Length: 114
Length: 113
Image (cartoon, rainbow over all chains, first blue to last red; front, side):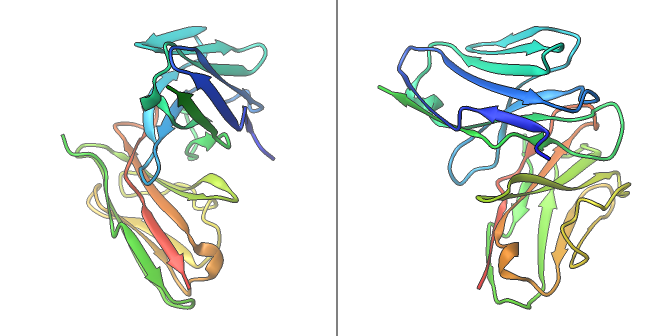
C-alpha cells in the first residue's frame, strides 16, 4: 500500500518558471510533511516542512501548500533555476508518536532548462 | 557544523558475506534512522533509534538485518549472508528529536556480486 503518492514522475520547466510537485497521503495520523531535494550521489537534503495546523509555509523561493481536507500537499518552486534540477521527494511521518520513520513518495525528477 | 557521516561510502561484497555499515549522527541528535534507497523500491524506512533503543524492528527486511546504537551516538547496520537483492544505497538520518526534521548522511552504496 503506497501511503504517499507523488506526481509527476518527471517535470521540465523553463528557467524563471514555477515548478509544482504534488503529493497525496492516505494516513490521517500523519502530522509532519517535509520535502527533500536530492542530487545524484548525495543523500536527501531537507528543504522545507509543514505541519497540518497551517495551510502554507514559505521559505525563500520554496512554498508548501497544504490541504488537510483533501489530504494533499504540494511544493512550489518560484523563479526556478538550473541549479534546482534534482530529484524531489515528499514525505510524511507521525511525528507525535510511534516508531516509524518517514514514508516517502516515489520522487519527481525536475529539470530546469536554461 | 558537521553533518551526518557514513562509512564506507561504497562497499562491494560477495553474496553470502556479512557487511557492517556505520553511521555517525549529528552531535546531540537523540533520534537516528536507517533507510534504504533502491531503484525498484524507492526510499524505505528500516529502523528508528531513540537513544540506544529501537522500539520497533519490524521495518527491517529480514532477520539477516540487525542494527544497534551505542552511547546514544554511533550506529551500525549489519547485514548477514548478503544477497543480491540487498544491493542498494543505505542512508542514515538523525534529528534532535523525533518530532523534528531528519538530516541525512551521504549514504553507503552496497553492491552484492
